[in-house]
Image (cartoon, rainbow, N blue to C red; front, top):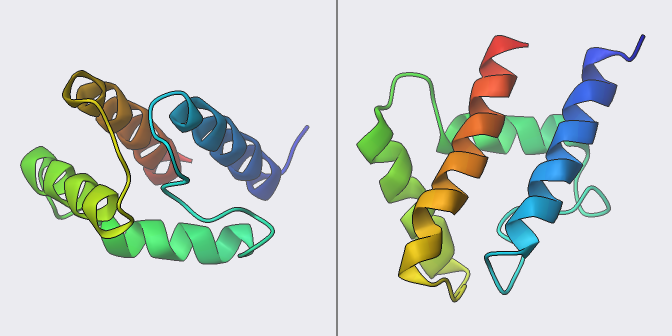
Length: 93
């Protein structure tokens, strides 16, 4: 049975791969740049449980613009759902 770290790592890699289809650059760091525990820490800073959906959407838009990522407007809801599914997974593991 996989450990929590292995589950999180596997799901994070799935998220990054899924996002590649909708954004022209990486939205989140690779695991070559940071350890998974550091990624989790960053995601918790960006997407705290105390924030609502609108605030999370604003953070995603901020991250996209700060990294000068090009995204089609129709893809934003898909990107949002992919990210929030991963955040909810983290919060429930």
